[in-house]
Image (cartoon, rainbow, N blue to C red; front, side):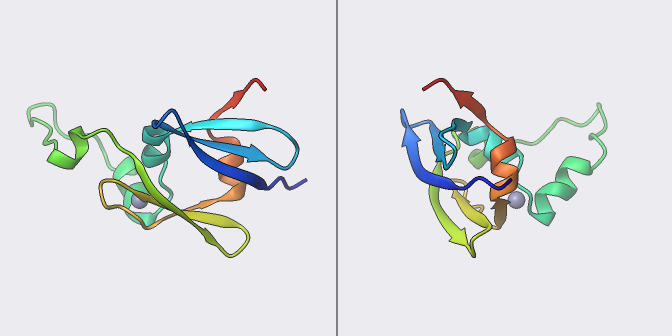
Length: 107
Ligand SMILES: [Zn+2]
């Protein structure tokens, strides 16, 4: 059975809230969404072997800023493309995957 988002909003300025067609409401941390970005580049990064422990990880300026969602654009009727505040906007989040992320909010 497919559920569809009926309402998208930013809750408390730090998370995305989606109300679904079956009445369920789920909250999504911006960081969670960013970390689960399904685009090829991010998938490759996640699957890359961890860096050698003798190497200090390099954290870019963008990575220490709290991540935000700047925009969400429907892609057909099956997905949303999410634009993050770090300028990354190539992730296409299918509605199915969004339904599996986040945490249910008691309504
Ligand atoms: Zn990505």
